[in-house]
Length: 176
Image 1 (cartoon, one colour):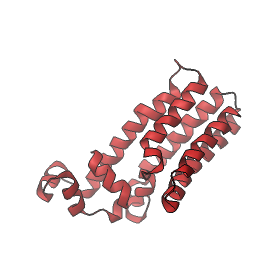
Image 2 (tube, rainbow, N blue to C red):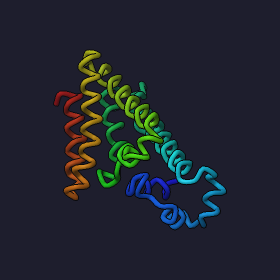
Image 3 (cartoon, rainbow, N blue to C red):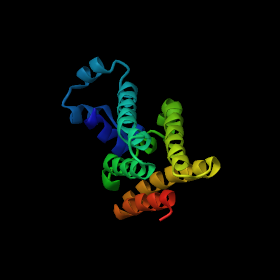
Image 4 (cartoon, one colour):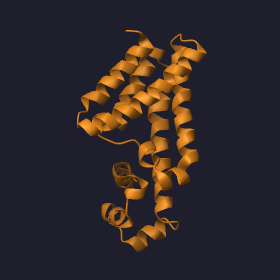
């Protein structure tokens, strides 16, 4: 699944060909269709679910882990975000699937995923003492900042942009 995810993240849904998916997995097209009878859409759905499960188990779990203080939870969540995006070198799956056909096919998944990001960051904001409205506004801005910094990091070939954004997010929540 990691290999499929890498191709979709790099090329997007429309830009990814079955030949590339076949090459990266080492499977012939017939074998891919055997595993994914609905073709590229099924592969993309599996990738979306795989990534969603990883984010849930690592980022969201870290942000919700009440065995830690809210400050530690935030820092752990941001560290997992840095890992997930390889320090700003990996593209976001939302971007990869949000162009034309991909958006039509995965609009509900994208919307649900973004709403979950906003929800967990709202909860961490509230846990850190922000009022509900302020926490939600900060959560939306956090999502915008992460997504935007990934695009700018790619465009400038400068992962410092992403790293600085994560630092700024931490500062926003911890008021440092």
